[in-house]
Length: 553
Ligand code: ADP
Image (cartoon, rainbow, N blue to C red):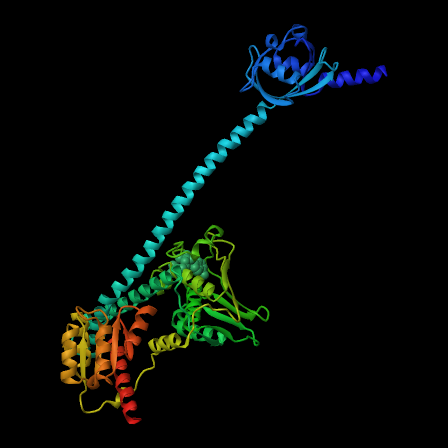
């Protein structure tokens, strides 16, 4: 028994809670070791004294006297107090209380006060709260700058889209004039000048490609990449792309090793976009590989639902830290110089757009792309492995009502007409366009085979159309005064001009513009910049169509 009491008193003595026992006369009867430390006062100094004498302390609302008073009255069980011991830092404690003994009248009551030091916890809580506040601030800052970034990104996309469309018009002139010179004036001009024109023509083609890539990127960013899906044999699409690129890799001794599975299912996707995917991946593999190396292409069904493509090269490789970035628009690592020969520049400098378009196209088909590489190392060809997984039956979410499919088909239909069917009688073409340069090019190309009349406004166009009854009308959708669509509707509503084939010029292929043009009654659509050949082909096709319709009337 004695042993147990000793044990208990030792526990009370060393327990990490400051215990102070107080009699009903408010004087201290006992204090344990921690209480001594908390009050910074030897216990024999405490005994017989009131708490006010021992340590100055308070609660936000109550003084020591109030606290004890309320404890004795049984109104208070636990409260936070601040202790201010002499010569020591302030402490924050949780003060708990329990009755040790006393009679019913609350005479001779003995209570034990238990001080739990929570200074440290409070301090941490305070820090956490401070950090939380800072984080909340940072968060709102982030939300704001995110919104700003989104706005800037949208502005960038819009700017690129508008700028690219604007570029197409002057490109029409450059491409058109140089086409004409190349096709018709070889013997008439100095060979040096001729070569310069050829180089202008090639530069225009390259710029045209870049402009189209930028338009693709903005379409992807603005989620308006339209697909024209059909059942495709991806093996043959891949082979066609390799054929197209052969002039670039054969001369560098690069060999493609194709391992195409025999049981490849047909893939439901957009042929042109799949060609774009293969061409970009293959040409990157060529571009970043040394001469006389291999490129492996593997195409196999991963299971019933998915097709897997691997394009593996043994070239300069891609650093792990760059592997995510390369799919961003306009991103280039710029390490192509560590290449073996000058041939690496065969495609001109990259624009950093290829992979972002590839990714956009793949994701639009419900697939994904990633790259695996051990990183780019000095004087070592680590190689890169691009993986593409595509769902066989991609749920392409485009609104494929038949009219849209038909319109796009008509726009993309580039089958060349047999121009030998020219008749002796020169058909008349009415041009309604305010773009003088486009008219000039068209005139130069077409004069040999057609009579050309030109109107620079819609109103004059209407007058000339009724006067001359042209065989074909070509007009811009944007005209000063009455716009092209209105003119087209008027022409279609009049007996004399109802059956004249009409084609629109446009600087873009946005669905809206195409739809508007066909809705107003036009037969075809010529995208600027057009080449001389393209223009002739389109006009002949319109004429032949008219002839066919007349035959079947
Ligand atoms: P680019 O027109 O510059 O090739 P891409 O978007 O196609 O633009 O590629 C982005 C960047 O990714 C390239 O500039 C190049 O640094 C890197 N890259 C792409 N393909 C490969 C590859 N097969 N091997 C090494 N680096 C590559």
